Image (tube, rainbow, N blue to C red; front, side, top):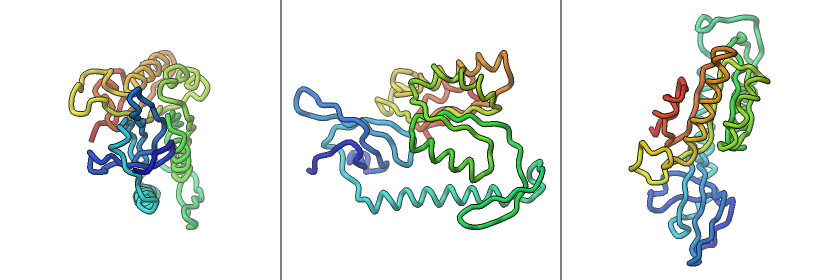
Length: 233
């Protein structure tokens, strides 16, 4: 088997290679075995796996998967901007450039968005899509475990109407322990961040909160005060 290294894109054999992951960290055990810490390429999930259960994915397959996802997102963007003029509360004309096409649309006032994301790649993509949609958004790449510590400072600075809290998550023991917060890799950080945001909003302004990732403890995130939370499906 080819030796795996940080940065390789792999799939888990025991899961029928259903999700593409990037190896972000390698933990060496005392018995010369290795545990690979993984982050999803096209899905917001974090996992770990023994080295022997991983297989490197051909670059062409990776590129095809990413291209398929990109095309799907661009399709949604086009559907959004091509809504009938009376679909939104509209204001002055604006020009939007998307994939080389110049089209006249109306400016849509949607409120200010503050988006905290634990993954640099996803942060950059989110910022790009917000721009394509003409949305007023500030995107910050903040690791999941740091988000609770900085969210109130950022809320004070930007005073958004919408807060988005995302990153990677996953269950440690899949299929069991659904109500155990410690069975989730990052849900407790999302919950703390939502709690901090709700403390801020009580003394400042109303705030709509979207939070969580694939396999997050979404019931607890909603219970903490999020309006919307990512569910396992």
